[in-house]
Image (cartoon, rainbow, N blue to C red; front, top):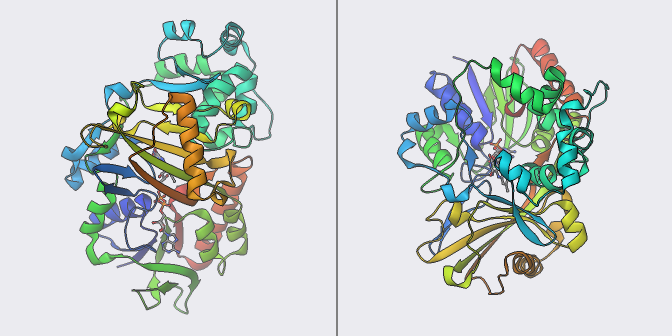
Length: 437
Ligand SMILES: Cc1cc2nc3c(=O)[nH]c(=O)nc-3n(C[C@H](O)[C@H](O)[C@H](O)COP(=O)(O)OP(=O)(O)OC[C@H]3O[C@@H](n4cnc5c(N)ncnc54)[C@H](O)[C@@H]3O)c2cc1C
């Protein structure tokens, strides 16, 4: 039977391994750390549940439910609280709820009357016919105006990519938005006519996690895979052996031999993959290296509920870059973790997951813990009026945290796909990159 190796035991590597294993294939995962999950890391301390990476995910696809049922963890799945429906954006130092319906759209003070009128012109804006990749900022300003970029899309892009909309590619980051314009001539037209064509039943997307945090999924799969999940071993390079099989070298603590296999699936960050595939293809490695990553710092703060006057009636808030420049805020935003998933902070306490860094402050790692905490507390004080010290603090530094699909990303993906096809043609063996399938 063909031997399949998956490099990287984050959520991509582990879920791929799980489904392949279920199909009866011979699959092994090699993971650098002594735990599975990669960016997903849940810790518990002093009654708080801390998500060191993602806090929740959208159950966009029915496959997520299927996976949870299959793994026996469906009963542990929890939906975000209804109280987390409000999402706030900071404007002129004040939290303003993002409108959730047409009436709120008219009455909101998040955008000026001019901004709203400009947004209403969207259906009359011509479709972009240029051949060059447009940034998110160019697209949004062209179709909906500067104010909608500044106080809706910019904070949204910060929330998803921790990135800068004036550098990210629309087509690569929001392919659906790109298609709405290309296929229907605009966002509103696409929203109306695109919906009519759909035959699939509408799925209500919910933000989900688990009673014991997102780590539940990788932990459960790790147990199922047993000794086919090799932890604490770092793959360093890949080449073809004399029998035309892949020879994978590990610089390891536990796994000392060279691993031979017929198919390799990479579930590692692009810059890691670049280093490993270099002996096979310089071009492939060069294209992978061009994919930028930004650092993120999470400052998790916990307080006794009585110390906080704000009702914390929402998911949290995001700060637009324009406001950061104007006022000197350092955090990108704050998730009110104990509102989103009650139970994250223990009885009588509340928890905040504050995020710093990203494309807006790529030098964030140069600050020491005290400086980072001071920046966070100053912003929480200015925006939420919290002037008390937290009872619980946890600082998590993530140097290469989030990939940035900057302008030209699709060209890089095309090069990557071409190089992978060449390797397959020359060797009849296949390399698969989970991110690009
Ligand atoms: C701070 C933060 C917040 C986020 N928030 C959200 C959110 O709220 N919702 C959401 O849906 N997504 C969120 N994301 C994105 C989400 O976490 C990632 O898209 C997802 O976890 C990536 O999983 P992955 O398995 O592809 O990669 P990773 O999790 O990066 O896993 C890669 C694995 O490869 C391993 N590895 C690296 N080098 C080697 C090597 N040489 N040999 C062997 N193994 C190696 C690593 O140790 C790691 O385990 C967030 C990400 C971050 C960083």
